Amino acid sequence: MIKHKSITVNVINLKHRTDRRSHIIKQFCDKPEFLINIVPAITHEKGTYGLWQTILQIVREEKERDSDFFILCEDDHTFTENYSLELLLGCILQAKSLNADMLSGGCSWFHSAVQLRKNLFWVDKFTGMQFTVVFNKFYLQILNANFGEEVIADFSLSSITNYKFVIYPYISIQKEFGYSDVTLRNEEEGYINRIFNTSIKRLDILNKIKNFYSHDFNIC
Image 1 (cartoon, rainbow, N blue to C red):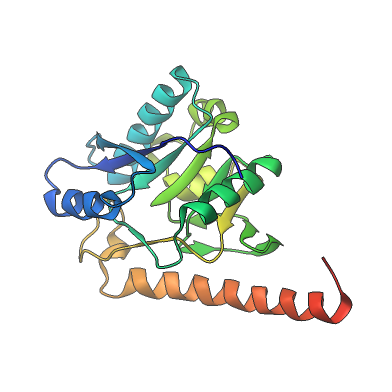
Image 2 (image 1 turned 180 degrees about the vertical axis):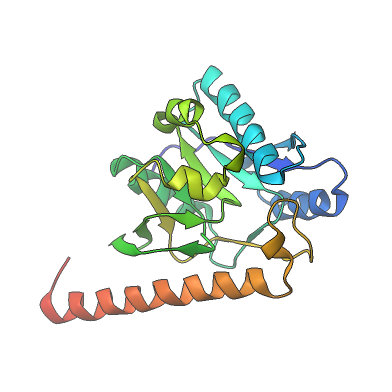
């Protein structure tokens, strides 16, 4: 297990979204392992571009202080019953050993996945960055990325690295607020819960397949 100190969490929040700010503060109020920093989101007529500019601001600051990693958090993040500090730190350690750039606490969608450890899947392009560990080695690549105003932060970032993983079972999902500050599709009632549930079921199936064949053929 890695030596533990307070884990920096940069939470992006629009100042007028007080309901979201109250929600996210409650998520961390009983978790002293985290050092929470509420970051006022940069506003732009294109919400996705404003989000991207905010992420760049956060990464610049983390690069300046030469942090080993930080957690990028959106204000709709919600811990699942699977969360534990031990699980999070164990997965961070495993991801670092695999040269990770990003480690998701739970992605809303992914194209394909491969289970590498009991609690760790490699994923390709994915969506959902409501609770994402970003490692130091990825900072400069993020800052040098040129996606333009059509950027979609989660999809764009996951497209420029092969070293991205997700914790299994999920420790984070998104809360539905009935509106979205970034993506219109996310305003559809039940949409967020539906896509997360679909992704969770897909990983559950892959986990069952791996367990079956590992047991049958004594695969480690």
